[in-house]
Image 1 (spheres, rainbow over the protein chains, first blue to last red):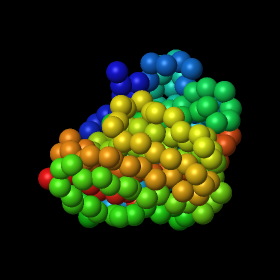
Image 2: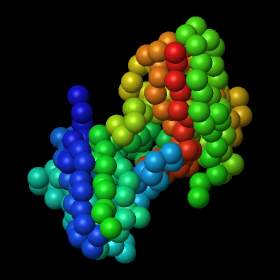
Image 3: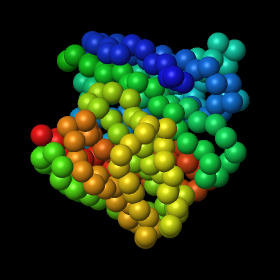
Length: 115
Length: 113
């Protein structure tokens, strides 16, 4: 059973456009929502993360929007660049602080930004 | 860039062979993980460790085994490789108390013929 559902599976955007990737979850105990970026041949790397006490977090061209009531969160990439072409994974975690917490990943979105 | 290393990067072996995938980190992280990922697909946690002499199975059942004799080293072993083991294996680490921020290695792409 997939606990974090991610869409779309693939996305093609023109340079300068806005890329939007969505994730939905069912487990209301999730309280941390990171996004990871993975380039071909590399492991995923943390891009940006949010906790449910805020509805939006912005870092440069990357913004997470969080809707607690709808149990959805999304990644927006403004002014998308060809260098943003990668696979993006949303994730969620729950549990007490410390060692017990683990990540549940979405299925990934392959983003292609055309020059 | 995170200081976490995996060897080999690519491995092609025959069915029935025993293999060990190496993972090392120089960040002093207590917690380490192994994920299995088919190309472009989601990550599945197969093993994790809280620290030395601690190992746990993850959400995805795996025929592999792991050991944690040293903090910096978390090898994964397949006693008898099969074609169904063909996949990419990613190692990661994190600090205790910051388990959500995981640092990933570059992965080992395994092909079992």
